[in-house]
Length: 109
Length: 117
Image 1 (cartoon, each protein chain N blue to C red):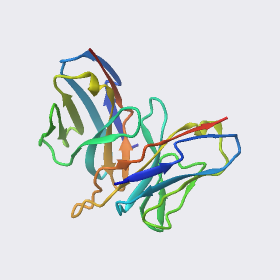
Image 2: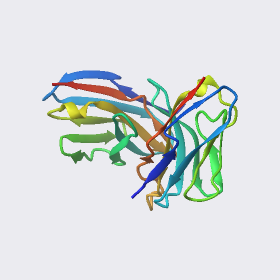
Image 3: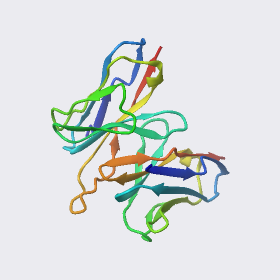
């Protein structure tokens, strides 16, 4: 069965810490992997990864994909309270997106 | 720049009632989809469409119908509401990414919180 697994499911850190969120997948006909941030409402897009080993970066966030080992990581450096959210990993395969359960990140002041 | 618009934002239904959740996008996206989000389970695909006149089932289609008569609109119908359909529903759209035929990132509506009592 196609699936996306995220770990940890929940994480509590203090401001300034660096965190690494993990996403592993097992799908057929993989096309891309996406990361989203979800606060109180709709998920907002962070990154889309299609090629192995190429890091995508946006400010303090970065992500990389390993298509051989079927996983991706999302790094957040120097965390801030505004980073508190659920981070969703999604894989686009065939004609569908499948989402993982999300990692709930809480950043304490 | 409206993007993806969902209505209503909140809805309470009695068991057995039917209703339609509306979704419209103004980005001329080919791909549209409906998800439900339940605590600890991420987003699960209900139905999707790759273009007007074409729909298909996702992971959890039972109890829901969709249609895609235009590119812009993708309504989700609950035929006979059940308490198990209490959830937050998201509509999303994407466009074709070109040569790879992969779709771009999904743009989400703001969600509909549905409670069935």
